[in-house]
Image 1 (cartoon, rainbow, N blue to C red):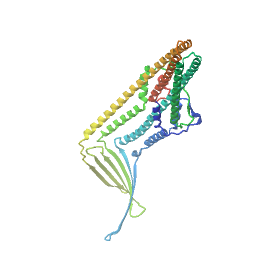
Image 2: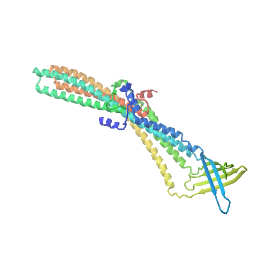
Image 3: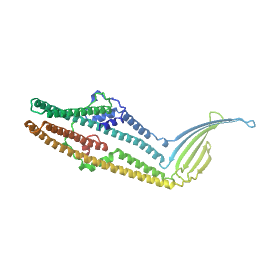
Image 4: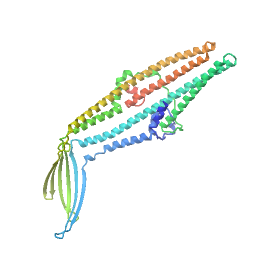
Length: 462
């Protein structure tokens, strides 16, 4: 567990601490997530980049605006057999796309989708980061609970050791029993040291994830895990939970957007006979000296069938005007014959690719649904486990009372009593682990559903 936690740290470094002194004590997992997200430079920059890309995509309307052009030319020619000639020309023109079958709009929407996809990727990455913070936070909570339990165990063992020593010194206990008890107490002390060391390592890991350094004074306040009688079984609400996750999950929304635009692209590719129409208007000034005072005007209608893969045709119809009216008409056309023997195979491949993408999206949804139902079942199992462990603890507490009386009567050895104390301590550790797993299972579902931590029951009530 500790190795996994430390490995997750590499993904979020380097970080720096910008939290105020009042945030040096973390009181809840929500506060831990908030501090870690605020202090993570990597995620802050990723979010800024995603938002700027979305803004940039929204302003990428250049294809819908007229394209302006200005041209200037000047020519002087000197010939021995004829008079010198001079010409000067300035042309101002504007080209506006009138119709292209929705190509520009599709490209614009896809650019916005691409930017939104980057933001969704950021949200997915942030979701994974939050999950790692939650895992680290509760790993430390479990370890600190285990430290307290083992401290109590060692304290009880040392108390019994003192009694055992007194009995040995007064000839009421065999030396071999006394020495065996000393060995067991030394083992318990060693186990406590190892658990305390693990807790310190987890705290160091949490401090780095929260944006500080291993030497910072950030501390995590102990949390009280919920009692099982206050928790709600989720299996009766499994369908509703899946409905919420299905509508809000980042991964599913991303796949839906991918499918939507794949269909749109395929639909546009079928419009091979839809032309692209644009208008070009220009005004030119020509003469032999400045200022140029001889304007002329022209307008051209450009029609292109560039989407036709076999016979791309382009035509231009132009009209020229001067101060005296219409003075020129021009028509041009050009086409080329492109051999495409694999055209129909390519089209079939496009349909197969879309079908594969749809199948993959359905598989992902089914896989997520099964995962969600497994999480729900695990959540309810933890409730049952907590109830069973609590009942077991009540029984073990009663057995400890009986064992203590039996030790005082000489019917049971102190080694056996120590073993009973250890079993009781292990069961308390199991209880802390089960309580932690119960909370974690709820938070995992909340992250998948994109709802605030602790808001699952409220969402179900709504």
